[in-house]
Amino acid sequence: MLASKAVGHLSRTLRKCTLSQNKGILKRFQSGQPAVHVNTPETRVTKLANGLRVASEDSGLSTCTVGLWIDAGSRYEHNNNNGTAHFLEHMAFKGTQNRSQLDLEMEVENMGAHLNAYTSREQTVYYAKAFSKDLPRAVEILADIIQNSTLGEAEIERERGVILREMEEIEQNQQEVVFDYLHATAYQGTPLGLTILGPSENIKRINREDLLTYIKTHYNPSRMVLAAAGGVDHDKLVDLAKQFFGTTVSQDQSHVTAGFAPCTFTGSDIRHRNDNMPYVHVAMAVEGVGWQHPDTMVLMIANQIIGTWDRSSVNGSHFPNPLVRRMANEGLCVSFQSFNTLYMDTGLWGIYYVTDNDHLGDCTLRVQDEWIRLCTNLTEFEVSRAKNTLLTNMALMLDGTTPICEDIGRQMLCYGRRIPWPEIAQRIKQVQVSDVKRVMGKYVWDSCPAVASIGPTESMPDYANIRAKMYKVFH
Image 1 (cartoon, rainbow, N blue to C red):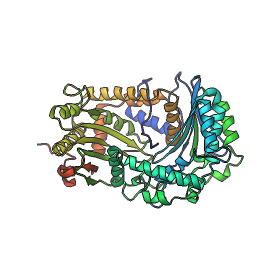
Image 2 (image 1 turned 60 degrees about the vertical axis):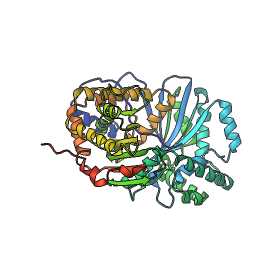
Image 3 (image 1 turned 30 degrees about the horizontal axis):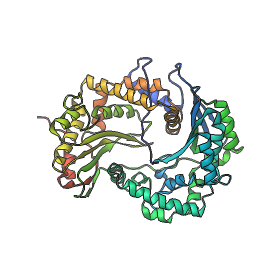
Image 4 (image 1 turned 30 degrees about the vertical axis):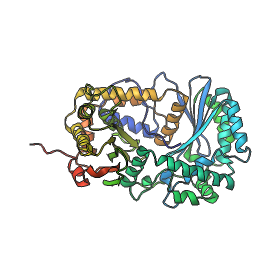
């Protein structure tokens, strides 16, 4: 039930424009003005009097996904209540004033529906997948669990144990652990440095009053989006939203804002040495950008150029990706995966790799060499291939009502509207080699990275050495 990962979604080019026009499109994203009109399913948006936004895409299917996207996550917590958002998500399905936990589970199962939730650093999501004819019941159930959860003491104690066991499972997942370490060092002293689950001492003391306070503070209609995709009639969805979520008063929400403080990035290093582990897990990142920044798409393309690989793959020594060829030919690592994690006002652009102690130093150096190469020596073929790969991956990610619904909800919170696929595709296709070099030079060249590592880290280069390799001296 942990969060999900962040990218925008895209399609084909409709017209040519310059890079400056491309940035103008982004401004229209932020202002809510459509930039391209095409014959694709329309995402209709209606704002209720209390501030709740209702957004849907009707594709005429027999199934649908509907959910609440809430502008609330671990970023809105502090050291003393860290873990509350995730704890509250666990409590959502434990019974309401109208349904016991058993009644809720039986009703959802008898509908043939699926009910789920997850928490990320900036958002909490509750959603249901059901037959389109059952949309009214799905919306009513979501409204009930959000607004009428009993938060019983017995259920709180039961879930406390469940969350603590979940934390133990997460601690066995080295990738999850190293990314939590990366956030802890990159955003040290800020809410983005906190984990989503929170520390065990917080979980042991969170009580009903803490949960009610979090709901009252953050679960406001003006910070929510009711999103739906599939066989959904928008007007009916709006009527359902008014019936189950609407109030006649709007001024009581006028003071509500997201209100998060900026989180400062700190170039730094954290390592947890454990010689009993067979491999070293490393995450290294520079500060990227937020969802609405003009350089977002360029960094996504650079992320695709770095790519993803593991040694069980059939692709290796003959793959067009230079880093893949080098890792495969020299046997430097078990796997690597580039990432571009986006938040509202900042981000982490980097790479996660797994290797052994014998190859740790060389593997780290090869990664940094590839980063610097992207600043200075890119080819048109690499950029073109990365753009096509990005478009394909994003198209595949929108296969089904649930990912489309998620795309709608996330984009409504991040941009204030659903961005049409062709509109973003055009921005991707306009990116040139010079743009990638410029952006890489801006964020990677001579920067201070954040580095997190766990495992037998004896051969991990010290931070001063890593920092010194973030540029290249040409003779």
